[in-house]
Image 1 (cartoon, one colour):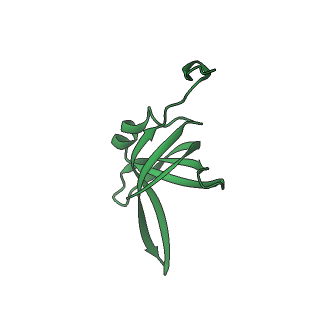
Image 2 (cartoon, rainbow, N blue to C red):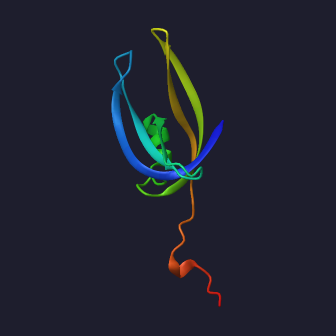
Image 3 (cartoon, rainbow, N blue to C red):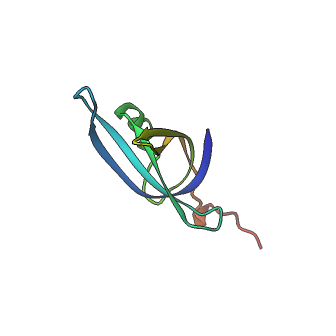
Length: 104
């Protein structure tokens, strides 16, 4: 399992058709990682309506989050395609001016 911290910059959901003819939902979350000094963007996936509903309240535009994820790979025509699959999302506390302690 891997961990990353970043700001959510994009959220979207997709309905996909499975091989058995059923449909499923997946959520794609793009974050911008800034801890390294670079502004790398990474897209993560949450698959299935149940898991999406579990994290829906935590995933909001411009929030800072810590994400635990797995890397999944699929081979197709001698090429590998990777998916960053979310295991857990943790919101970072957002401090406001009122929350900051006063020092003189």
